[in-house]
Length: 107
Image 1 (cartoon, rainbow, N blue to C red):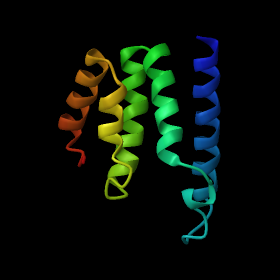
Image 2: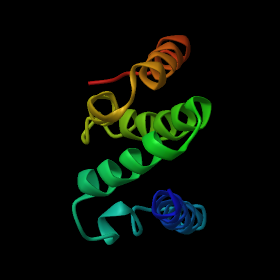
Image 3: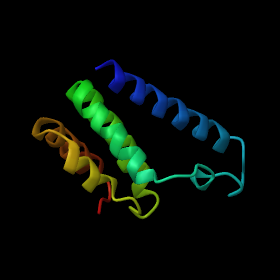
Image 4: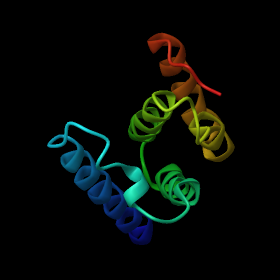
């Protein structure tokens, strides 16, 4: 369980750093292209850890954050499908409810 928490904390630190960089730039000089590696594999590990160690509400919040970001990028990573392949039925029910409530475009 502590390894899952470490993975989640590490991912969230990187996400905060990325968001912080983007807040100070007014052009496409910075972006997730600066982080090398397989983003889908990173998110897979993140959601697997979150699914096994977070509450249903917490998991849904993490999933929705990624799904919303992905929807702004034409669903290029297909986050909704990735979350669906990892989430428990209870977790996915909450995610689906949020997607429908907020009218988020998913692929």
